Length: 159
Image (tube, rainbow, N blue to C red):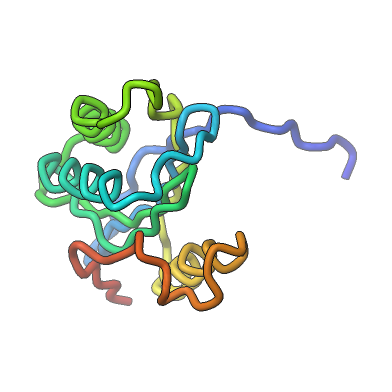
């Protein structure tokens, strides 16, 4: 390798690619500002899920809420779906408005990481990675024991 690749501090958000008869499923990681461990409480979980429900331009599938970041899968809710960046900004704003502790603010890191899935196998691999996160961090022994995860809408992959 003649030149090392530079470390990227801000992600590139590629436009969503639509392919005939294939679902659009995006794997997203969103972090708290300064990676503060503020997300693992029933109250925080409920606020975030409520914001996703209200920001209904995209559907949230499986998700895992970690202390300082969130992994989620999402898919457009309609044919004329909003831009992913605008949708994420919207639900971040909704959750910030109802956040219970002023001392946690600002809540969200400015950007996020996203990857459009290309195959069903990627979906399962990414989900396994996300659900194993609490185990890798020593928060639980079994990923099913982690209380801050779920599936709001079944996002099906058709090959």
